[in-house]
Length: 474
Image (cartoon, rainbow, N blue to C red; front, side):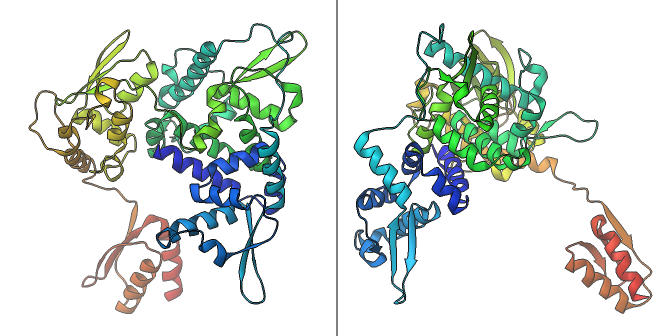
């Protein structure tokens, strides 16, 4: 699942960006060391395990002999990643010989993990205290409902089947970059928001987590604390209850935000309160390994550009509505068609042809249809008919479209581009005119010039600078 792999890598990039002191603090927890180990490239994992019980530095030259000549690039990637995460420390001596050594804190805790077994972050609460815990099936249903409610709000909050209990301040954090709103206008999906909705759940989750951590300092929270707790949470057991009183204040605030997204379910007893992790939370570390299982598909696309979605989900219907025309909906079936007008609607929501169309099936819409193909058609190659992806067919009443046609349709919307500008003429001399042109070019603001008549047009954003420049020339 390439989307998950990229976003999980970005998450580890955030871990790597932490100061050395905070990274060493993270490595005091064995389960975090395990999560980091899971995230490493295969060759990097091999190096860690080879050096786990070596207490002396290893020269770079010696390590290069561990790989075949054609593996030098993978070797460099592995070493760079280990150094970025401070799993390895690099030293260059007086003779300019480079040596590597495993981080002692990381090494000690990983050794304990291997010899003593997995160390749980905290013990579940006794069953005699936590009564009427939800079943795993009920918990999955709850997580799905919470997550779909959040996604429906991105598309159109008025379409949510039940009012959201997500606070507006938290919603702003989660939606940042996904929605834009101009004065006196309703919120609209941004280009990133459109792409976000077409990703699979794990990729969406990693995106939200990355944004949540990136904006933590605005909430006066140390990002290292959030990273540590998220990694810790992934090692809890799905369906088990954990005492909220064992959490720090930062963690208690965070657990409320995660409950809004369906990662945990909160419950209150007579004396104690607890949280119950769902699969969305415990799959975080699984996502890092890029081994999450393929979800059940539901879409069938025909060669006449009609699509059939076998789903009861309102969210699936609204996502399909982003780029297709929904004709009717039965209790367990959505019927629609991909048309010129439906793709216009997608373009207006911010998606660009250069990103939406790609003959290598990287197109957002095509990828979504492929990844969500019904099992009956998922086994076929291709799962989406070829004429939908790479051929031009005559229009019928359903207005069949193709990848090339999509690009042409978007060009219809971009024939005229409006740019605020200012017009200048009647320059006192050619020297002043040419100086003004050069000045506008330096500011990347020159839109048009007529050297013969000494006239020019510049972007409105540099108008004040241009006025000041001309005033000094007088």
